[in-house]
Length: 339
Image (cartoon, rainbow, N blue to C red; front, side, top):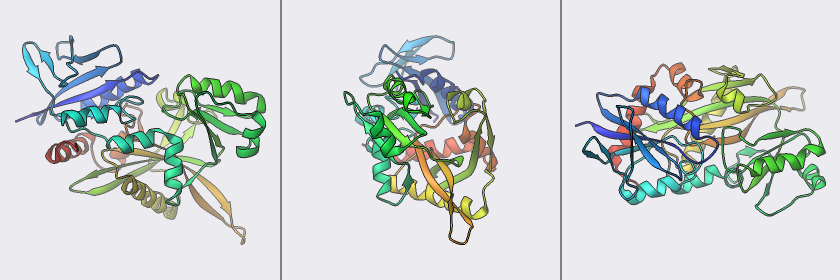
């Protein structure tokens, strides 16, 4: 019997429309011989299931059910593709845990921690993962420009501590850039993260786990933005060159993949995640240079649009999205709800 999959998209962040584009991508890849698929668009105003005839119908939040032309539908599985709250910060995962509906991502704790960039950095530093020097500015707190420069230097990046898709991110080159950038980041998140600049080659690496493969690390994508950094236009409007597999030395490629697999296991992650890094150079005493792997961030509901990294990496790996998604969903359905 076919299982009913709800692709849960939308949310209340600036990434609402991007999420719907990811939902369309996932919808195109799911195997209709195995699954009945609905897109469920949620926001603080309404939860609506999109029906095949183009109509929408309200979702009963008490049990996540809805009506499809007289038939009551209760999805067997939720594929969460909300980029931002409440799908990437643990809130929606807790809801589905209460209803005993299995879902595509990691559980509540890991989602909450990976969504909070500062908390994630402090946690992974304890396992030897290299991250940028950073400062967290909480809601209501102020920080002097001189303190920022002294602790992280210039240029630096100022970004929302919670969020993604490069909304609210500024590369600050002068001291006059700092306070406007903090205000811009606060439009996306109550907490603001200030990070030292990491110079080098930006890369992105997808990872997932299935019962057949265990932890599987995908080919690495090299990111060459046309502008100064990998911002929203680069991610979603094509202002970037994406090279898969990345042009890295074999040893560096091996070390990145080892680190990605280790981080996945350290977190106890689930589903598909994407880990972003900067590869910087360290000068050795003999005059040679060594590649240094620095963590940028982890995305637990990575983009699934036509321009996203994960589909590119799956293709470069000789696989197809339909088979990968089927394996992940079927494993999670077999395991049942984590609650």
